Image (cartoon, rainbow, N blue to C red; front, side):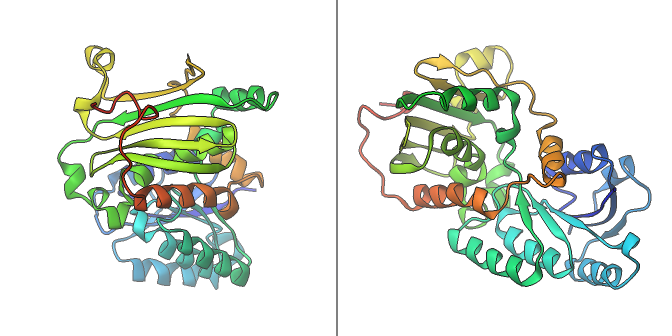
Length: 313
């Protein structure tokens, strides 16, 4: 049976992936909201989407639908708004009688997660999030192979995704609203590392500014050196010469894990899993929120032999 969806933050960068996922899983979009009205992309999916620029009117519309016939009610709300608004918009959706699929990070601070769990209990509706790397076929195979032994691995994570000056001017450049680099661009990688190698035993942070962060994480089965950046100048020469603006690399015991392909439909796969009852809920998201908060609030450690090689010595 198909489901009725609404989208909060439909004018944002990530919303098109959710729109495609809603369509490609055989469901329909009935309502959307965004303070910006440059949302012509909606016409690629339906000419019958009720659109609002004010969250209060959107809320009123969902409430009207909730009190109407079952076939017109909103069953799920996709939250694609700025990070610092996620928990508020999740609560709005639950109170409107819908379940939620929320873009990462689910929240910025761990205590916001506890509040969401309480309202889940009150409303009997569920919040799910996008942990898209958990459904990547190559990474699923890697996890299966790692589960066959109990050894501790040496891991190096490098993720550089170039952003222009707009990034720092927008809410994404404000750590109070985005959670900073580790949360905004790193949370799904940190989730991946814990999913692969177990819980955190200790961390170090060697560098932190508004464009890059780097540190070390000791997991149950891995020692991880990591580097994250939104500065194009950090791209390795190989990426620059190939004209690439993004570089992602994970090595395990010196062996590169190739997973650069297959990213375009990961949101759709997460939607498929969620609609089949296998979504990633609050308990799944909690460890990565705890870790990114710990990284964000950690004191800077002097560089030592565990520091990532991309850091300038």
